[in-house]
Image (cartoon, rainbow, N blue to C red; front, side, top):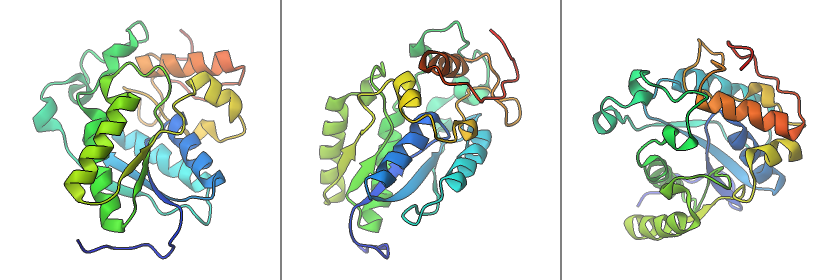
Length: 228
């Protein structure tokens, strides 16, 4: 395998990122631990990705650091796999009244990790990190899944692959409270944005509002729908 190595040699990690609070905190914590961080965004063709990428680039710029690599965007379209799923059609998007399980995206972490691992292997990097939190209800977000996925990726790529979830003991509320000095105003987590604004009425906006409120941190988000 031909390696496209980075200029530096030690403590390198590929971080799977989105526009959200968890991704911001993940990257900041990795930088604080002296890692050289390559942020990777996997673009799947979901309805919110245009707004999400715009905000992602904003907060990456805000936390500029000598060990933070430029954003890498990998294309992995899921339209042929997901069909008429709400994440593609925008119909029946989980609202603030829905259970968290309603936001399930089939095989999401399996797809993201596969794409990121191939990229990492091509760069000669053995560590992947993602910002999974405690209480995630899905089967592809458990410690067992990440351990088994790492084994599979090591076999498939014939390279050491370590999957790290350094935020796995945090809730979103605790994470915001612990890292309240970060530019959360630039983060994005909405299933049905109004342009680049949070809709204020979907499941993820409700989760975001609740987390800031319980953390005792002023919510800096300009929601299209101001109150619930």
